[in-house]
Length: 432
Image (cartoon, rainbow, N blue to C red):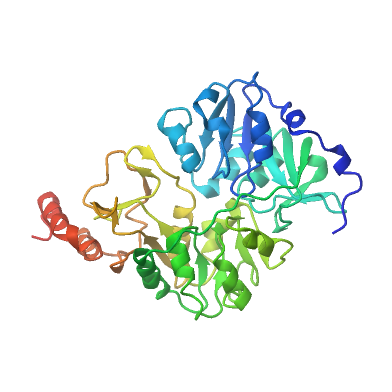
């Protein structure tokens, strides 16, 4: 690829780049594999900053700003809480923002959250002076367009991606030039429980379906069982490594999609170097902001959308908790509701909530009569459709409360079914 002439000579040190941050700034931080770690590391060495408000989705790598000693300098406002921020949220040093992923870009474009700075990773500029946001577009595109200044880590190893990924080099206020590996997220091992769940879900995937799956053992278990399918499409907010063999083999060809036909569509990817190399300069993979990938009106236009989303807990009426364990914030709303609704409205679509039947080594049931105090309902009982555990899959759509309780107890762990029947009988006089 030809490069924009003279661009590298304008690079500064990371310390000089972050010198443009001011106390009290609202700062967007690029996420996942594209987390600009070089700039974040330099940022915490500033000793004169106070009350810098950081807004971000999932971040990867070391997050020094979240350590207790920096609590006065940096206040994180995660729009999706990951492992690196849970402790800070628990301690009241960071503050979770509940929001649909599809709504995040408009927080910045509307100035509901007025951004002073976008802190991002970019691929090097091409001969036309155009960089890309690489592996994560999500809300970063809106942040770059609406922040007062853009501070970048231009990384030689960040893939150059297609779709709505471009950031003009002249939009960048200051940058550091690096050549470092991206943060990788390696696939967890698939346990027998997750393999069983994957088998149940894969059986519902018809030829010609459009997939939305996330990251983790259950999505991987599903993807590992789709090699015998045909003409699948992908319109998702993210994907990881196990989607690659399906695309390389032609199982995923996007032939029947109505939106971005012939292209795999995502907002970000998270996985290994093999995945990053696959999307690099690959015109068959398009990255778009999450207000497009997660737009229910667009999702529903694709045929047979199969959306697979996770839950921490579900009650016997169908209320799905996916972002907290009681009052403790665990993750976020993300795109679950965007795709649950979009899949349900798609012709032949299937909206699936997937979870192991138990937690804590089998000590507690994830299917419960009453959600924990403080639990966040991400998917309402009016939106829920399929629910899958290792014991089967049930369709709750159109069922009354008694029928729902019966269906969900049938896929609960056998050790807890009698207790659930007794509790629901005492509460609602069902299932004597």
